Amino acid sequence: MRRTWWPACVLLLTACKEPSDRDDTTETSITTLPMTQTMPTTSGSSDDTGQADTLTPEPTTGTGTSEPGDTTSGFKLDMGEPSPDLPPEPLPPTELWYSVADLLVYIEIDPLDGSVVQLVTSTINNNPSLAGDLNSCGLTMLEDGSLLGSRGNTGGTRLFHIQDPPKVAGNLDVTILGQIPGAIYVEALHTDCDGRVYLMDTGVDSVSNDGNRLLRFNADYLAGVFSYDVITDLSDSVSVDIDDMAPGISENGNIRDNPGFGIDSGSVYALDYTDGTGNLLGLAGTYGIHALGGPLFMDGKSRLYVLDVDANLFEADPVSLALSAILVTGPALMNGDPPGDTGLAGPLTDCVTGFPPG
Image (spheres, rainbow, N blue to C red):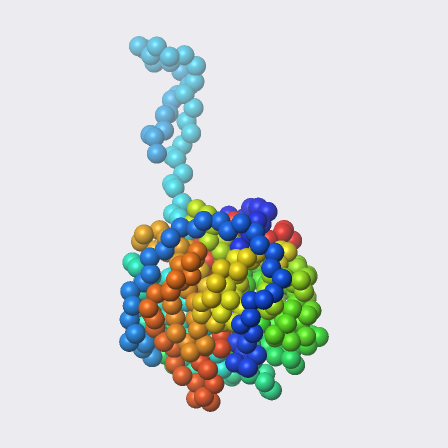
């Protein structure tokens, strides 16, 4: 990934919570910035039955002397053999993930058209959820393809790590990293183009912007060191509460980490995470949103996906939010809770960060 910084102009990962906590009102104070035109997307093929549980020039050489008949003068330097071209970095798989309750769900996306190839469900043996109310569930994919997750409620937030996320059905143990000090209620996680991890602190509750902040880890969180910097005070943000953070799609159709897409109980925003400004795009999904970069697809178009509270996955047009047919539906929960009280995670393609250095 290119490691350069550019200022953010305008335009996420994961949250799940009690349906009663939802706040779909859009009557908030909104700072509207001009919406940049993004590339149109082609919706993936519809398949309401797609669910499955297993589901270089030659070098010149010379002796340093002129040969008879040689009309040139001076030396011909022996530069040796040219260095071979380095192969390009392999692209990450075209995939989405979410985690809710004791489940980890893998969704394979078809690089031909953005449709769903298969959905695979794994059961987490050591459930990282906290005791008490239904947890908000955060998930983000790190640079190495591993997954960092969170379970948060008013009692605090517990973090866990999955080094090798399984793509076949079965049981797994996750590495529980510990609980963030200070009873911080995290709803979503986000990874930027430089591999840094952000946390959406929902403040005093999950239905207002009182105390909302965007945090960034500044130490080895995988070793259980959870110190952080405050990037943005979101108490006066564009939205009441952000449930999931996703990368954005720039005016030329490329992925960017910020500005990005933010979702608040189905309200989708083009959001600048450095100051909380942006504009409401419309309604789509419920708590889950993620964008996959054009290099992952044969047609070169970046795609936006949303997940609703019933665990139905859609492709959404990044400008109009027009939805495809249901691409796949995730598994039900044994406890009867809504299976889509969570968000989406996935890989980033090569991009330039819009977050401040540090």
